[in-house]
Figure 1 (cartoon, helix red, strand yellow):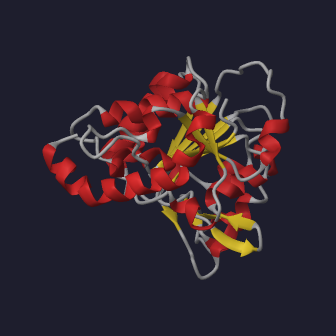
Figure 2: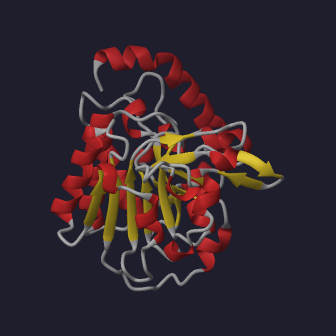
Length: 290
């Protein structure tokens, strides 16, 4: 982290340290020998990346909670009732990028994934359609990556959407280039996917739709049976995201999902250009950590 980042971090460091004392320190004796932390957020805590909490003292170098633990988030405890001894299955990846032609770096991102997974299928620009997602058959793939825009509609949260390529006139809601939360709920062909990565902005942000039921793009995929979703809490930076995603998927070849994401973030932390939490902290893992 640069000296400028350290100076800018001062008020944030104070808050992150206070939150650590409030949220983590009271249970420190219980978790001291643990390697993984499962976060079950409530209310405003859905907006907090716990990875950024600071455990070090003011006169010490910054040490984030991420450096001490693997962290993942759950919105349902059913993840712990699933078979814990299931065999690891190689990723069969399909990816969509740059659907509206405004994200050329996202296209580079998914082309890099093709280099890692030679059997992956990549759809970009006009080919990145909603129709293609609906046409996927069971067993064809088990991992889905979106490198596109995420747009939140806080007036009607179920109309929040991932940007896809519009087909035809765009008059048909199923081909208008907006994969909404309500449409995701209908994608039963994605049930039991190992991983959906939403490399887009604010895709983990939730809104209370009914008491106790939070709705977000990330939760929409979990609701239909996807095992794990990686999603973002704020607007992401292109270069840092590309590095993070490349590291994450490289790590997935040899590591569980939670460790793969942790190691990817730690690589950014060690990079003076991207050590500030803004660059590495937006992406969180929700669901099955394995």
